[in-house]
Length: 326
Image 1 (tube, rainbow, N blue to C red):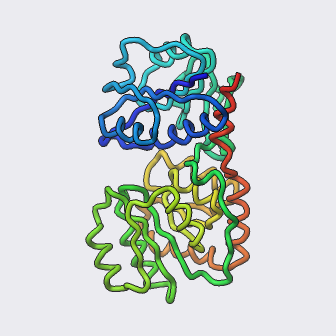
Image 2: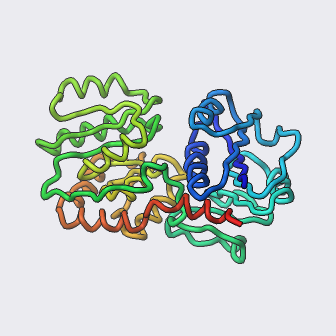
Image 3: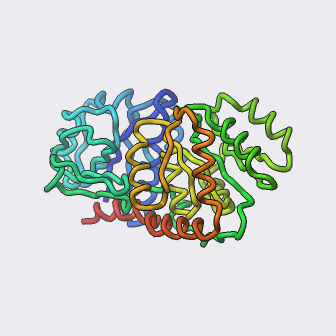
């Protein structure tokens, strides 16, 4: 039985939708269903999906499709498609799920998926078929099953990760802060392909070859393993934050975009975060150091680690996939 995945991605708008849809597609295969991608985007995104082994039909935009196919299951993850497109999907499929990050539309008949932690259901979605909350997060496959994490007596490794492009160019500031405040601690920096500060980070690493280590374009497995090794992390509030919770890596978080606020509020409400900062705080370094200091005691790190792993159990993608079983 086939499930059609309608999503979008390109070099211009990024691959965030595609990444989580690949996680969902892998879960479909696990439960015996066949994924089939319909992509609004560019050739780069199409090639990415083909390398992952999935069939794909590509259009400049989802709404450029001449005719929406008909079938059993449909999964839509889009920031661009309008209500007419969703109505067309709803009319042509028996079972459908619409991934919704920020209450974008009044969706037609079908289930609404929103995996932001501890998020209240808005009035207009009450009474709808919902896949709601952190139990349904679409983690990448290497994060489905994660080994236990050791909580060391002292902090010796700190991970710094601000996504693939470090939108606010925070990484050099954070690395300097950590190198000045934490002696005899290794700083492991995840460097994405879109970083503007690669040269500066290389210079810092060369000045501190035994302390500052750069990790370029890590795979999902590489990210998971680095998270397992790190005693604490400094991160933004997107997809990586869910992965850090899954692994159980205590985290100090900085919001770098408005669409991260609900994630950060939810993880704070549930206790995995002590709180979070915004990238444009006038006293960011000192405030961030205060958040890091709170995570230094072993007992505090142990509590955060256990809580994160209990909140994000790695089974969310499979739960969503099982919704499509007849």
